[in-house]
Amino acid sequence: MNNEENMIKKMTFLLAILSILLFANDDKYKTFKIRNSDIEITIIYPKHIVQGDRVRLIGVMKNRYRNAHMGGLTISFPQFKYTKGIYSDNTFDTINSYSPPDKIYSGIAKKNIRSKYYMIEGWENNWKSRLEKKFYIEVDIPNHVNHLTINVRGVLIFGKSKQRRTEIKLPVTNNYKDQQGYPVGRLSIPIYQDTQQKTEKNILPPTKKKESSTGTGFFINSTNIITNQHVVDSCRNIKIIKNGITSSAKIKSVDRTNDLAVLIANEPSKTYLKFRSGRSVRIGESIIAMGYPLGGLLGTSVKLTTGNISSLTGLLNDTTTLQLTAPVQPGNSGGPLLDNTGSIVGVVYAKLAEKYSAENVNLAIKANVATIFLDVHEIDYTFDTDRSKKEVVDIADNAKKSIIQIICE
Image (cartoon, rainbow, N blue to C red; front, side, top):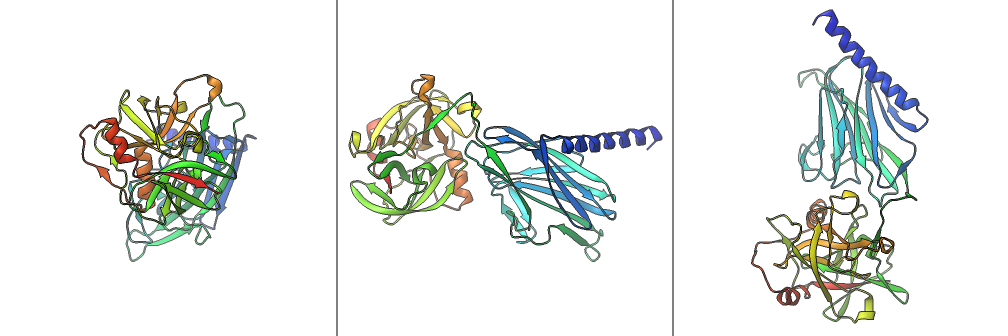
């Protein structure tokens, strides 16, 4: 390498370090640091983060002591199970990211495991002493998150052969561990509500019934029911009504980011709904929404509305949701969205706020988001391999056996 190339490389590196220092010293940003005698890690992030924002963070790791054979910085986001970040301006030799259902290696388990949430890592070969490496990462903040949780860890590896190999880790021990089983430093950033949002949606509330509220759910196997998290939030007791028979259930798993929950029913069901397999949902496709809108006001039998898929993304281009024209009301929350074969293509959860005077702009969580949630929590479900179209009345007759009303007390 000639002198001119060396000079360009040094200038590029110095500019990168200068940008980090300017970023860190800006009064709009804060820093989170962990360090030991060999490693120093800094996370730079905005002081004020609002729900729905796209936020840019910087991860920086410094080799403080001696030349290392290699090293890596890992940042993970336990709340981000279904969305990926965007990374750029990387000075590591390589950078990789993982999200469900990607496979990642766990040195603790000594095998590949399935990723449970989004993770990014940068790796550097021949890491010289006192050099810093960094990457930028952009993430979209979900609308239901009140605190952004970030796991941080780093490692330096010395010695090329297995016999001489040693690892220096940061942190060595901690109360928190990431999905691979390693101790991590944990950063919790408060997230603020946007008081000037351009677009609003109404989460379909459970309907009020004296001191209790009601919503909808449906069986996805003989014992588990899927619904919205907000339907069962803060319930002291959960009752379910199936075919006029009342029994009880309890919460098994929740995903507040995507407003999903799974219940365990005390009484098993002989029937359950199946998820669509194969073809992707298309704009204009006919769909059916079923549930228990408005509690007892409309009677205690399951209700059905029909419509079409009007968009493959939700509000503000949310790729985890669908827009539909089938009318839904409070109490429909957690009900199934079915295609013309009777297979699940979504979970109903919201409608556009009434102040926009929009008609039949309703929202459902995509089926693949629900199945990833189920995979993460190792909950069984089934894909429907029967692709034959059915009459609406036949779909209703079959589906209503698996759809239940939820009473939250």
